[in-house]
Image 1 (spheres, rainbow, N blue to C red):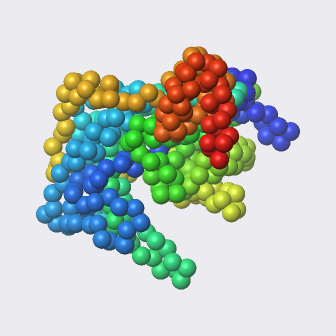
Image 2 (cartoon, rainbow, N blue to C red):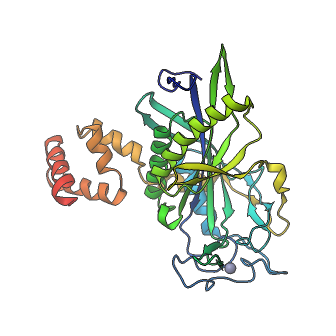
Length: 374
Ligand SMILES: [Zn+2]
């Protein structure tokens, strides 16, 4: 890995470069939860949408929601992934009050989707392919609501709703690129109609894995990977990565400890603009994964993906390219007009009504982005 932009040298810090991969949890739009028939309702009265299955009561049996699987396949195809012909469920065991079962149903070694890609236009490197390593289904936890008096109340409404966890390879090299990736991911998933991706509703949660390589002589020495949590906006993502970059270089200079493993989990305190240690070591072995005995594996016919693929809408990147190449719009205008699918579709109808040629496209684009948008 080398490029002109990323290695950073300053008067104080030695030359170094960031390495970033991102894990995102995306809540899929489904009417009911992943393994029971409870409704998915945001903002409902606490603990109204629960049943023995999502509360993990003894004897309750999960049953896979077909809509969860179909939405995940749509998402996977939109990200250019291969859809597995055979996928299975695993238990990730840990204790936390918002997880009444004491384990989470997830996919460990046989994820539903693998090997996709999201392209971003990096300000420093140009087009960058961010490889999607995997996207797998899992169930969400409940919510622990902390009160000012120090008590906490549990709301299990969210327990068992469908998440797609999307994991990239460490292909990102700056905080800005990470933000661009997240924006494009959100555009794609919203365009596909698989998730609203509203961060304030926790429909999209981002956890960058960050470390740096410090140049010592001729060698690039890796620091330990930190997984950053509690990032509630793209601005927080950028701030936390920048903060972590400096902290890791300084820690390495002070301690000489090399990475990249074991990795730690760190939270982000936006008011203090710093990350803080949550858990020192966190590796797969700590979770004692084992196959979920209550759910059969899923066999997916190849024709299912072939049937779904033609139903996918034109993705934002293809639409942007078409606006530039066939309508003669600037890349900036094309990006602004295609940010939301509904808006883009409305724009195209207006262009068609105005004559459909490049001149009318330009005029309608100007009008749309000023008067109409207001
Ligand atoms: Zn339920």
